Amino acid sequence: MRIMGIDPGYGIVGYGVVEYSHGHFTPIKAGTIKTPSDLEFLKRLRVIYLDMQGLIEHYRPDEIAVEKLFFNTNITTGIDVAQARGVTLLPAVMQNLPVYEYTPLQVKSSIVGYGYAEKKQVQEMVRSMLHLAQIIKPDDAADAMAIAITHGLSLNTRRVMEKFDKAAK
Image (cartoon, rainbow, N blue to C red; front, top):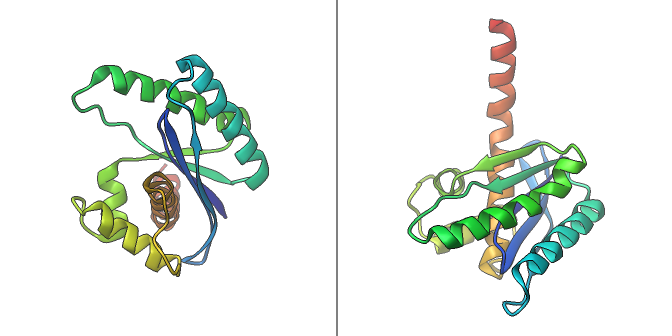
């Protein structure tokens, strides 16, 4: 199964693509979509949408995993990130791809085993799990890869729960 992880944003969108089979991950691509800060916000959204559409068409993921937004203190920035997240996911929705959301706590717990792990710990575990020589850079791409891996690790649990739910009905 091919999984695309997405770390949403409007200045930088991280993405990571992995092939997942029988508990093993093979890295396909990690990268970012960058939009210039001097570009009008709506044009930045257009760049994100078109680039994500191209990435989905090129890498043909079976499922999409995205970081769930958490609003902290700056609600204006949060609203802008939410708008960017929407246009980031629109190409997946238009192609009827399943989209799954994971909180940062879920990602850290899944990758490191501790929900309050440091970013460096997550990056090092991603490097190790993918048998890479170096940590993925930039951070946004590494975060997206961690989200993709989290989704892969959750697949078996989700499949078991779906079977349990069907049997209970």
